[in-house]
Every structure is written in C-alpha cells, then in structure tokens.
Length: 254
Image 1 (tube, rainbow, N blue to C red):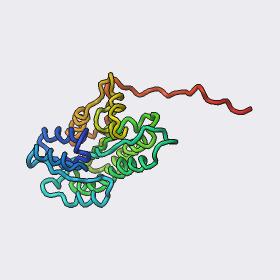
Image 2 (image 1 turned 180 degrees about the horizontal axis):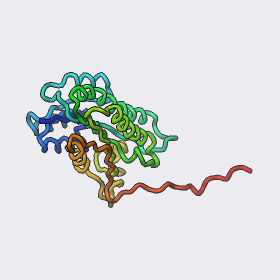
Image 3 (image 1 turned 135 degrees about the vertical axis):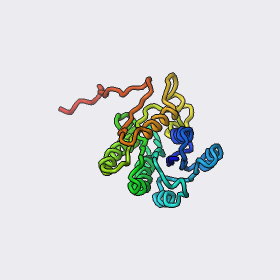
Image 4 (image 1 turned 45 degrees about the vertical axis):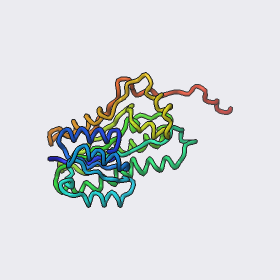
C-alpha cells in the first residue's frame, strides 16, 4: 500500500486530494494547521489517515515532522505541496508588505522546507513523486497579482530545476497549475469579504477542488517511466487575456 503526504489537507484541493487517494486505497499523511478538520478526516477513515498539525513555514517543525513519522506512514511515495495562499488584491504601490512576506514564507519557503525534508527519503529508495501546486498566475500576469503570481512562477521554475537535479533517479516531479477555482482560497485572499468573493464566481462555472485532485491522481498513477511535467488547467469559462494598452498616458514634455 502506498502513502501520500499532503500539505494544506484540511480544506480545498488538499482535502479533495486526500479523499481521492483514500478512495484509491492509499494511506494519507494529512498535514495542516486546522487540527479539528484533520482529526475529522482521520475518524472518517480509521487507520488510513495520520493527522498532522503543521505550519509549513516553520522549517524546524517540518523537519521534525518528517523525521518522526511512524511506520507505515514514514514510507512516503508522493508529496503534494499544496499549502499556499494569496493575500490582498491591491496593486504593489499600495498593498500591505506584510502580506507579501506571508505569501513568500508559505508559497515558497513552505514548498522548499517540505521538499528538502522528503527528498533524501525518496532518493534513498530511488522512487517517489513531488507534486507542486502552482497556478496560472505564475504564467499570466494580472493587476493585483504581483507577489502571489511571482511565488507561483517560483514554484514552476523550482519544479523544472528539481527535475534536473533528480535526473538519473526514478523520482518524478509535476507542477499543477489551476485557473479559476472555487475554494476558501478566495475568501482568504479577500480577508473574509464573502460578498466580494461570491462576485468572482457569479455567472461562471469555476474549477472545483475535485477537478484538481483528479489531475493529481492521474499524474501520480502514470507508469513509473512516465513523468507528467506540468498540467495547466482552466475552466471553460476562462482564458488567458491579451495585453492591455493604456490610452491615457501623459505626453512627454517638449
């Protein structure tokens, strides 16, 4: 029986991925900050889920968590670096710099901490799979995306470079890049403004967490010689837009 370690497993994509792999008879290490939700998942699937309260921003806590996993959950076949967030939609010149720091610490450093902790285990076994949750925001810029988009661009390039470092091993790396997706993510980004969050999805059919969980399941369960490098997925209602030209630019002084 295989084991998957999922960060941010208490809600959204992380929770849906845990459920999808449990359906496929995998053991799940469900890591996150909301202990009560993780315990509820474990109670729903007795013996198959190890709930792990963890803040991926804390390097020492991450290292300790991976080092102390009990058997059989210590033999990790796949890591899903799902924990991440966006904060704010303001342009760079007026945003809160503290929000930038939280995004960098979670979306970049959290991925680094967990990946570095698990890679020696995977390379020693010459098997494993790192699945990173990027975003189309890492490829397509938009107003207010500033640091969030930059963190996801980092995840995309880090995934590519990991494959270079792991060349010659059987450890695989996949970057999943979702588009418009309806989860608690938007509510967090808008700092609890439920009305504004609902407006984003009004009249549209966004992606759902289960859609991304199915992508992860598919990528992980390809034959061992197949590496799915990246998956960019959008709802039908979304497209990547053309660049804009501002027509009101002031004329240069004579």
